[in-house]
Length: 382
Image 1 (tube, helix red, strand yellow):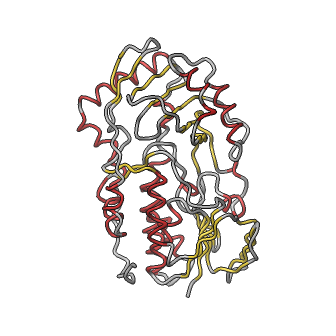
Image 2: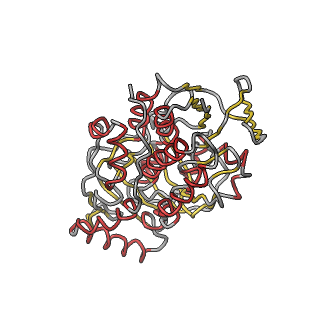
């Protein structure tokens, strides 16, 4: 039986684990967090490909049950006067579900069939051509046939096997913040050059986007993230000063750069990258769907190749074009334009799209440019 180690228990990792187990692989998932991470922004699924993958996994109804709708929201100026409309359908899909809820659904579908190791991370990967010897921060060393980095845009596996992050991750000039702060029931959007705040929408109670050069890494230091965000937003008008002052009461707070990942190949030897670790996500509404569909295709190709890592090249060849949408989108420029003129044009565009909702389908077209193959009948799921 082929043994596979997956790094990352958010979305791509458990989705791949689901399919690999059903094809008869022995799967272990290692996750540095102590448990499935709750919260996070709403993620979306769009188009027949993504919906088919959810249906074939047997989770479509469960995902629909967690659906959250984004309604059209007023765009206001610094005085709070309405000056436009932000379409709720922009960047949204047919189904929108909080990331933490989706992660929990995937974990529940796999926890009895897949070994999960929480509170640990990979420290070394040694590929001798016949297998991979892996060392961990806490656990004993183990050997696997294959390793998958499904651990996000700041992938630890990519760093260990491919090289330092700065060689593959490009900062696109903006950051985003998701903060769980109660600001009232109304959905509303405010923008000024270089910053935007959205309150009450489906992404998070407070969703901030701001322009900034690359900041010192603060991935594991939430207090530092809050200081960095507050400094970047210090010239904000409308309710931004109030929101900054309430960072301390946020039940959850997450900040990251809007960045793009560029790798020459998804795999090296017996290690392959999946999801944001491989193709990144510029906050354009495609990341989660690409991860789920990518997991389906990667697992199918490994099944077809009987676990031979040669399947990685086939997966890359079939999926690269479909994943390329992640390299064409930079939501930071749209959400937080750098000039007053840019904000005005964005507001006019949003207001027009709010009226002509059928045009929103144009945004979803890149999610439908792949033909899903049938990889054989997997063993029945529990």
